[in-house]
Image (cartoon, rainbow, N blue to C red; front, side, top):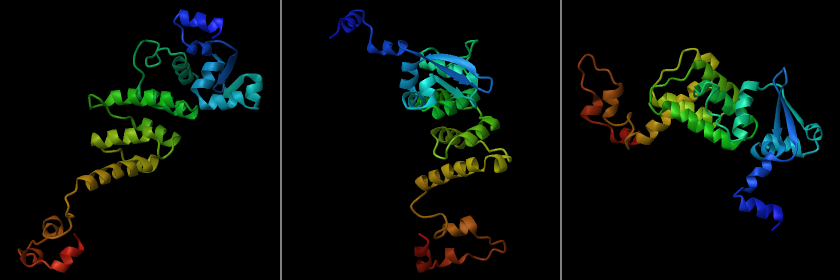
Length: 235
């Protein structure tokens, strides 16, 4: 064991401090290129995107500069707080971030390949719905569906919340987020299949109650003498 390592052990300092040594990388964010100076070790250890950009034979690696022209500086500033293990869950006024901000931060974390942050954000979002009554802004749903893939955990969480709360989607979902409507319906279908009785609701005598109309009082044949073969066909 080297003298440096021994000295660190005696001080009770773990090897994680190594991320705070070494070179500094400049990350330019947004069209105006807001500059963030971040330790290379931390950046590459917490992001697969930055690891790939700064360890290969790329211009970014040679210049120690990465440009994120399409990202939002305010969101990236929260991301940097997470990198340095600072409190990233509240804003400058000490208030919890909005649901929309968390969803946008999730998308950023996903783009940058920071899986650990994605999971932490999901847990923060779940906290919004613990009391049960918080609704999801339509604009947030549209953004999430415009910027994530079909199997996104964030999509799945928001859809499950809407289905559980029995919130009727706004009619403009038909044009702005048709896939979201499909996903909500699928949640209900899966639930019905799981909890449906052994016999289908359109089989046997239930078919009369559920679907037949006998306004003139005519007895239903299904109630008088069901056709065994026909009933078996729809069991």
